[in-house]
Length: 66
Image (cartoon, rainbow, N blue to C red):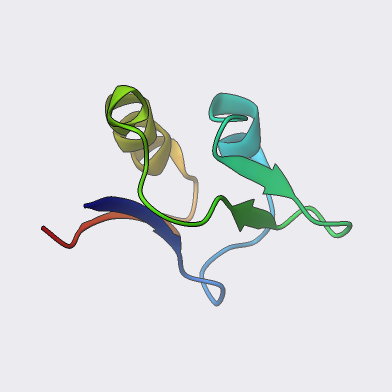
């Protein structure tokens, strides 16, 4: 099971993640990411990996619970 997680301390609310992965990330009223719950659909894992790498503060991580 692959999940996307965010480190709320490291995140500074750039919002790039929501632009790159709108299917799995929305922004709250302050511009911080709200992640979709549960497992990432298999077709989004590759994109999520790119989004995590593009995060300016490296606050996003992919976690494999499998």
